[in-house]
Amino acid sequence: MENNYYPFVNLPLPYDYSALEPYIDAKTMMLHHDRHLQSYINNLNELLSENPRLQRLSLEQLCRLDTGRLPYELKTGIKNNAGGVYNHRLYFESLRKPTGTGPVGMLARAIEGQFGDVKRLFDELKKAGMSVFGSGYAWLVSERGRLGIMTTKNQDNPIGIERGLCPVLTLDVWEHAYYLKHYNLRGDYIDDWWQVIDWDRANSNYAECFK
Ligand SMILES: [Fe+2]
Image (cartoon, rainbow, N blue to C red):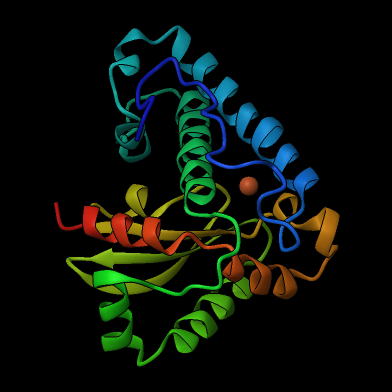
């Protein structure tokens, strides 16, 4: 991941704001990337600005940080905002304009081996996304090559929860990800999110998990 250390900057989206239309609208993408993600970046930089020791840590290390000895405010702030940056970058980077394609490469083979077919993977991811009460994420993760589905609350993420978990895809189910277009219909948003997944990127995310 580029710009993996303090000071963090908001990397531009690798596509136009309107690239995911008609599934995810340009205004949602603009607000989500330029305002919500930007806030997490600003907050994280602010929290680290007076803590040079923490500035040497990568984004992933900040997510995994054992914050036991840090003051409470700093501990909560770093966990929420480092997670906010990591989770949103993965979310945005794993989307692209709709192409109508499905899983590719070693990820496709793993999905077929474990879920039988891609429809079943989708059904389970959707169920997980729908089950998040309040704000959070559903994830496709790899644990030593084995795929799994999990959810996290707020800006928590799998890498901060357990060292062996490696994210392949993330589904942001915070209302800010869909409310402008889909109102309260999270299920419709999840159906639309599925249409704009960058499966090449998901496959390379999965391959990274083996390194
Ligand atoms: Fe979000």
